[in-house]
Image (cartoon, rainbow, N blue to C red; front, side, top):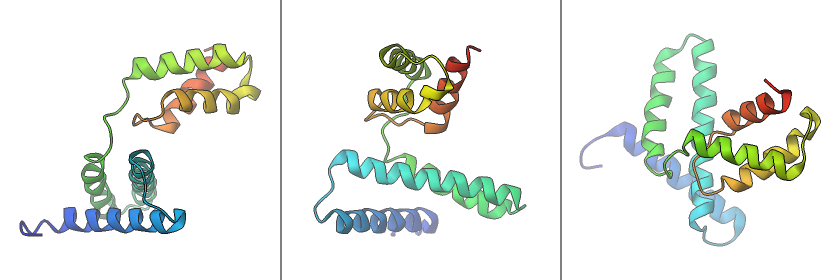
Length: 136
């Protein structure tokens, strides 16, 4: 507030409101993992918004959302290493005995469980699982 950084201030206020709303929903204080989930959800919303704004030709709004993502990502754990993600997906496929794209849900669930506590893009994991199950 004192530095008059309006963008950072609005992003942090939005985050605080989202955290408080989740606490009210749960009826108790959030733990660190639940708080990280809230932040990750806000980042995902911003990414979806950027995609829509870009399609609509509103680069000004897309730039604002990008700046908010940079502020919010400071409160997330570091992104998981791609090698760790690939290893988790390979292990999940082996554990579930998946052979085709029909088993995608089980593999995703197992892979995301292995990657819990790390900042991972679900879309990237989904694409990797799809690629490995299709044999490409």
